[in-house]
Image (cartoon, rainbow, N blue to C red):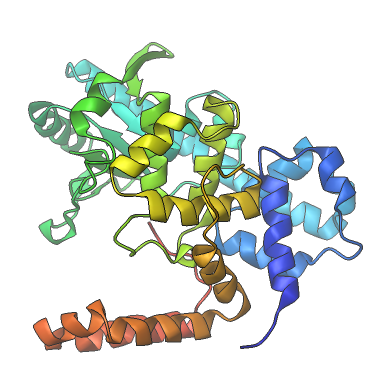
Length: 357
């Protein structure tokens, strides 16, 4: 396997730069003589962290460490992202107002919460869609009618998810609306919907009535975005680190930078301890989040293997899958072989392309 130490250095410098635990002094103390900008930017692009990178360079007063042309490019991307997020914020307000007019109180989830403050769109979070939840089934049906009344069209039934209905698209809006019927299904042991509903914090958002999960609910929901105990998410290389950074940010903002004991107890009770161990080893290495669990570097090694040689990573994963669940899937449904082969070929051709989640 080829060794690409600069790739790993770029990944680690990226993590240090965007971590909420970093300071200007700590960054300057470890600043490399020759920063691996090319590899750092490649990782930032893959993990959807370029806007966050610019925001953090500005916050720490480090733009003078960046080539002027590169600084200009980063600023342009960050401005584009902020403008796009402004559109998402307007979209959230329009949908929330329509829900309120119909007697509905939406609970916004995940990255959408970063858009609530007036300055949120410029905070560097790169968004793909907007997730909203209404706990009652009757409210979910009413919400679908409201969205259709606003001009949204839903995807086909083949796109049904265990936790949300087919996505809703609007021809004049940028974000897909994902209307949830569950917060983290099929992982209710981690966060049961009735418990999530009881803990909702209700907000007056510029005259609109909306909700968000309580801090523990937000942290558990964020964990589910990064990993799961069945192994399908343990290859962190395929999850944008923007998701892992969300978890780190929640611990930093809501729990004074310490992973709470109640969170660890729930993780263990739900059978997520091993996957959480691996994830928290990654977040400690990349973002300096103190890990209260014994280190398990397996997930980190996968991420580093992908950074060094993404095609080898996919080839190895495909071989492992062929003798595991992938092989059993072929036996159950041999007609899916062409589709599986096409997916593998696409990943070999563009291994660093961001995956849509």
